Length: 222
Image 1 (cartoon, rainbow, N blue to C red):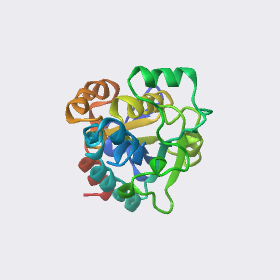
Image 2 (cartoon, helix red, strand yellow):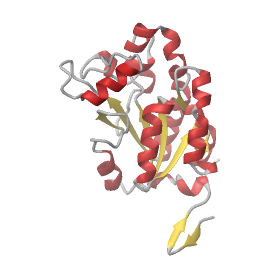
Image 3 (tube, rainbow, N blue to C red):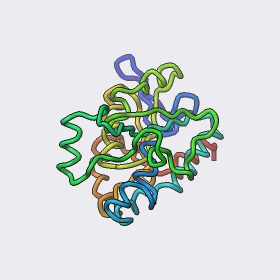
Image 4 (cartoon, rainbow, N blue to C red):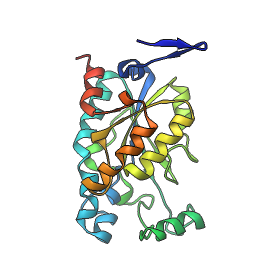
């Protein structure tokens, strides 16, 4: 149960943190260019590059369906770029190139920029764009959360050590209880996905590094 400390209420159970009316599910960068076999990453680096990303599509789909049924807000962020580089920066471009990634993905209005069909946003969901790794940087996300009186985020998507971790860190710094279902975040393959677990365990309370089944059970009241 929740406890009080220095005048603040501290929920110390997962069910207390993700009460549906005060929680949002944030799906990060599940876009064709990152996830689909015909997307930019698979074309540039081979389908093995996206196998890990594809492994979380089904768990996220189940989680999103449970969220909608429970009345949890479902938000999607997606990377956006312009062909002329006007949304980029020297730092952003250099960092991508340093990792061997030519940043020509997710151009606004293209198929690659769209959310994968299996996770297509539904009526009532919110989709917004981001320019950098964190879903908080240069976006309307915080205003969306404040306007809905959201205090907790369940974060899912790709890549675990990139945009997901950056978003989780920023959510915590902005005073949101932050929960990550382990089976709903991924890197390019199973080995790299497993390697991101220590970072999340260090960032999160033990009960907040969880599974989609646990979150769904809470939201469904089972």
